[in-house]
Length: 293
Image (cartoon, rainbow, N blue to C red; front, side, top):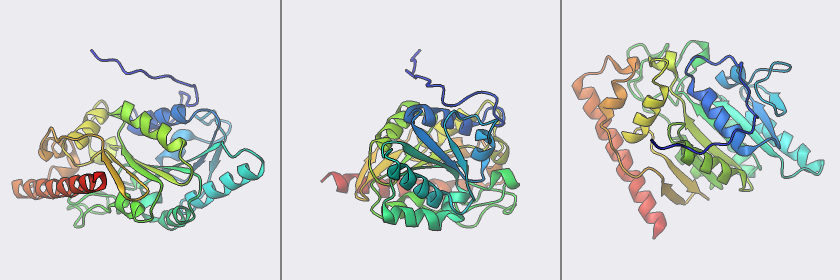
């Protein structure tokens, strides 16, 4: 048996209101213990806001500022600038947002913060929908996924937020998985030590919204990576690509079959999704190769 070395700094406390088996609460624990206690959290409305909670019942032992859904990155920028003005430039400002507040409603503020290269660490917990308001689709929802607002399956593909951010020449953007915790911690620590805007996209299977068993969140997360649906990679300064999990070890159907939101798919639908994943994997591999030359 292989054990993972993990040091808990006590920044994230028990007694929160996450669903049983929630991968987001596990991811928050990993992140805040990696960045450490010299941190201020900025949290817009999301599952993360429910998990982190508000004073005096917050699950975080660091200062936590709850902001509006559309203004997370702008609020984090203001917090960081105020800390710099007070002579605390090394305090990490950590934004914990969902995909609705990142891909959609909060994207204007995020794009502006990236363009200004604000010194913040922005984390998107990507559960691929507006999961705590009824499970409606977001622009992060994948093709063919059933949601509260796409009962027959979404007709358009998932927005590629990583490439959009890379086009801003962002200092650092990476994808993360709680099923690959050592890679996850390494990326958080790396991002913390980079000046400028850093963004981490963390895949979060929503157990209720995706139709996943309470004890299967990590399994589904790992299948997303192993199938190539959610590749683990990082981009530095918009040009340097590094693929962190270099082999596809499972067919897409293993990942799709573990969720109720895809149970309507035909064999032809699954084959089409597999072709799309293969094409995206090949495109990413070319980017990695080109940036290494």
